[in-house]
Length: 136
Image (cartoon, rainbow, N blue to C red):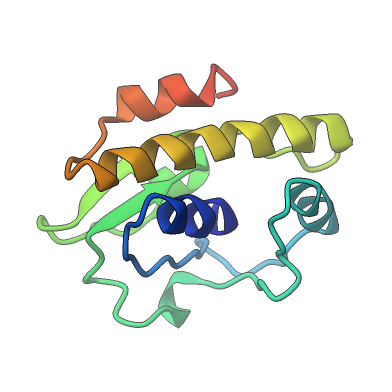
């Protein structure tokens, strides 16, 4: 999601810091690197990070979770932090076609989020879920 958000926010003219982290550090899967490269998003410099590795993780304007387990495991954020959740399936072990399907859904969610922010508004979860196209 980080790669998509960086691309779409820049394209929409939205100045934003984008950080990606999970509830635990794992690795960037080679399948993710491959399918994102197919759409011109380079993930080769990306690495998996845990939340405690991010600068000041308690002062984000928006926390977007895309994994149902992460949505449940994420710590409570201050009231001023907006939280949105769009559950995307984990394509691990399912072949490149599934990786592409999830990649495309994440791209649509990212594009809708970027357009909403460029218009000066926060999108709703229903709007982002609709953009995902039912891959949840």
